[in-house]
Figure 1 (cartoon, helix red, strand yellow):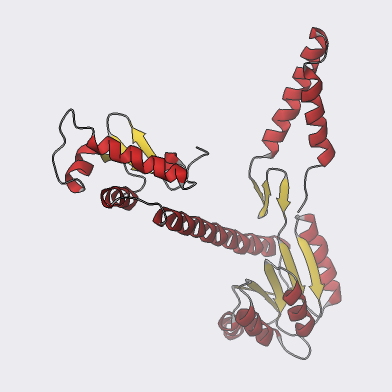
Figure 2 (cartoon, one colour):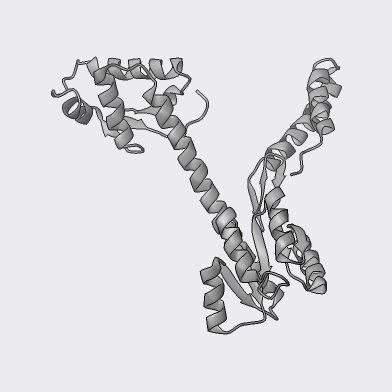
Length: 283
């Protein structure tokens, strides 16, 4: 994880603080410089996906790969190749040391040889699956179908036979790490939704307000017309001058804000109705 220099941000702050303390010509020059530097910061804030290493607002999250193979020369070669691709690589030469390293370090992917001393790669794969949720890419000189099936049954996510081509290895690594990244995003999204559900459950709503909010949540992301809400929840037809529904929505929003949630979770779509949004900006 690499952070942008603190000095860089301090320099930005200095630019702002001195901007209005100079004469007009100097102020203009400073303003142009500040805008250029601020643009750079914003550009750095873009999410860049490069070889499954993520970059978020000046922070680089590097994928950590563990290579477990008793071939020291191959390990050094893999370490060099993968490091050039931006991965953080560590090598161990037997199953026991590989498992011990995983116990104390966060690993995103294991490149695991089958033919290892003491305990073979298949046993190591089974133990990894028992203790961790780390994907495994098997490396082996045994490229026959029974060996491949045995490796997959032991817990390997993918299987590549030696000797292998580096582009193929890199492609398989990218595919596995992309899947891992998507799964983490899904879990993070589910966690956020769970938190939102718990927060909403603690809002002191009336019975009618609860029914209205539950109806909107059930149809989240969809614009629900006022007529539908009036009929399905309030059990009466919508009349031109009836503000009862609007008052209920206003009260729900007010209580959401009081409970620390954004009122923007309930969006008004002019001329159409209301929509519940799970993800919103700052209220």
